[in-house]
Image 1 (cartoon, rainbow, N blue to C red):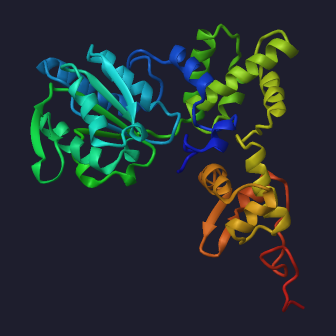
Image 2 (spheres, rainbow, N blue to C red; image 1 turned 30 degrees about the horizontal axis):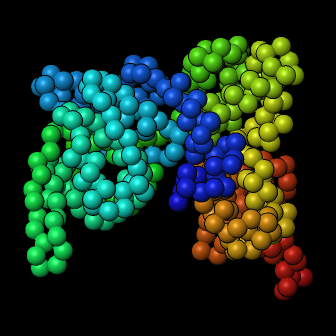
Image 3 (tube, rainbow, N blue to C red; image 1 turned 180 degrees about the vertical axis):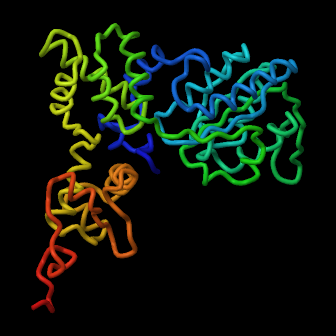
Length: 356
């Protein structure tokens, strides 16, 4: 798992986690843009995808299979729905973990309509037998259904109507090359710039009937970790605070006060992130320190620290993973207003055993 993988329960509980719970999914359905022109950010991906879809419509053919990769919360599911809308086709949504047998995939493929879009989320977690069946389905629009067992088993070819597969993955490196090669268009979703997130927040605020100023939107955007899903979640929490503690209008001061209540600081770090960094800085002198030791120091599981907290800290340049252990960067010292120990101190903040 990586980038706050949605399978991690700890990630799902965090206000700044990129996974979506039931509330997020319900709100996102109302906030999702309906076409490419309305979709904010990912300029290159939108431009390239627009050409792919326009060309397919001009030919009167189904669009090429599309692979979207990137961290959770950047809009992969939204783009899949836009692809279906642009092609005026129905969409079927499933996920890799839900397809554990080739028969599961065969049942889905055999029920597709011509031109239908099949969205397969977390495609890298699909079982190997289903994966191999998907090769033929994508390339030849045909699957072989095995009837019987043992030496008497026979393969019955089943023709499929032309369809478009949209695969989404947070870990493109886990996809086998034969599967990647069968996608006609591959795009990587990048993290958003603060200015793009401000546009997302203004749009969402309008749809949610929330009054927000430019400085208030900028304050929320700066703490959203480059992820629209997190920006929308923070907006809803700030809206609640503004309605209860103020006049309902979100200003910079209101946004900052609200996010202070929810323990999200000006760089988007939450309680877990700060606990990891503070332990690294104050208990171990900035490291290097082993992952297990660091996890014990913050009272969390090793996997929680490694897979939930560290990816964002590394991306922000606050923590480095080295062969000797975890090390705090100068930016981490500066963020907490601390002074880095001098050369006489050991890596764990104690006096060097052989020092003067």
